[in-house]
Length: 433
Image (cartoon, rainbow, N blue to C red):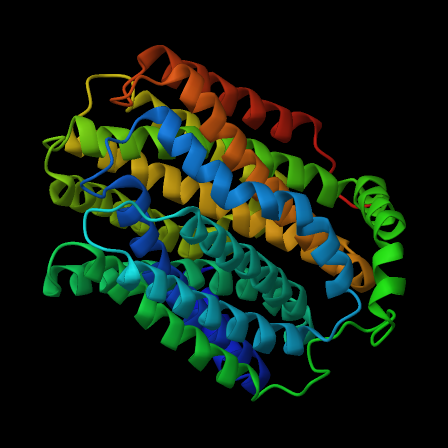
């Protein structure tokens, strides 16, 4: 598969009206995510009143991710029963309303006073709904794209969605520079993100109510009946993935990569604030981390170019193994004393490694999971995705110093990447059962 072929298939995808409509919803939704997350990053990690430590970063990750990790499977069962187009509309409306409430709390809190627990609760609600929304987008993709174009669609939509989130984050940073320092900066980014979420809800209405499926399931069944079936259906979904082998193994590889990526992410937050910038200058720390994140985004972009060419040539399982191997190489750069060049280079390689592997995992799960289980599959995907990051943050709190530089830990992470690569290359199934 040559780059010319990839470009041709991308052009074919963009000519598909139903794909364009779903893709537009994703791009606008994830742009809003970027804006929202910049506000949270500033508030939780780079605000002047906070002296960020590894433990505080871990607490922030736990507060933001733990509830969704717990409720995710329940959402997956409902995704196999509710019309996914309706999920896109309602989820974006809910996110817009909750973001508006966060803005009200920020503006109403007097300067210098800490924000109450309500902001954490509201942020949790927004990010939880966001994961639910992304699961619906992924589960609906095979309903608007079929055949060999699905691999290109899997490469295009998540990666350009991540690029859209990066653009939104960059817009949030620019907005922060234009606004006076303080709560107005955070509130401004969150307010604009609420508007973008409302626009995404309106764009989702261009899809027909039943266009994204599910094909079968108890759509419209009473909520009580649906919830009583959750445990049984979730167990059935997990057994289906395990029995098929390839999607279950792909999800485990994704979880390993995400866990190891999470350790590097926490370290980069701390290094950006404590070593690469003056710890007292939170604006400089945020700008440094934004640069590292931007280079990581470039790695995401390279993944969309390389994966459709190399994954079909060697097979998705071997491609996932190669990506884990690249992660091991990236970790070597984090062992010496941190410099901006080394941290950015590691970020770019880890961005390429993690996103390229994710594209291949998405493809395997889409291809080898029956439609009636697909919602549960991607809800489990998100649970593993978030639980791995939360576990990484917890381990980082125990093992990372407050400046984020731990050579021995980075060596251990590199070894874990390498072991995962070897196992995926030599032991993983190549075809579903």
